[in-house]
Image 1 (cartoon, helix red, strand yellow):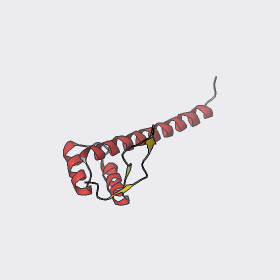
Image 2 (cartoon, helix red, strand yellow):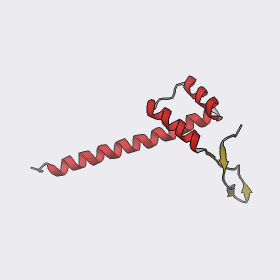
Image 3 (cartoon, helix red, strand yellow):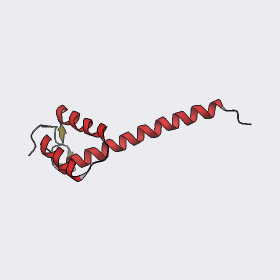
Image 4 (cartoon, helix red, strand yellow):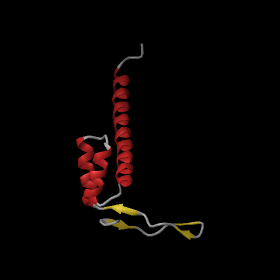
Length: 94
């Protein structure tokens, strides 16, 4: 079930150990990135297929895509803001 995932040390909260955090392997990340670059929308069939190919749960794939999409959106907004700011600084105020 967790093939290809690396384990990190468990984190203790309130004196009790929580479940160990799992990290995706480089192979899994590269495959997910490649699929995100092709199309950042995740269809249900695509999610299941990717999960099976990479040895992950469909939920893990969905959450990875959500996180990656949020990062992509943030980068787009930052670039747009920088461009608007640069254009604004070029134009006179009056």
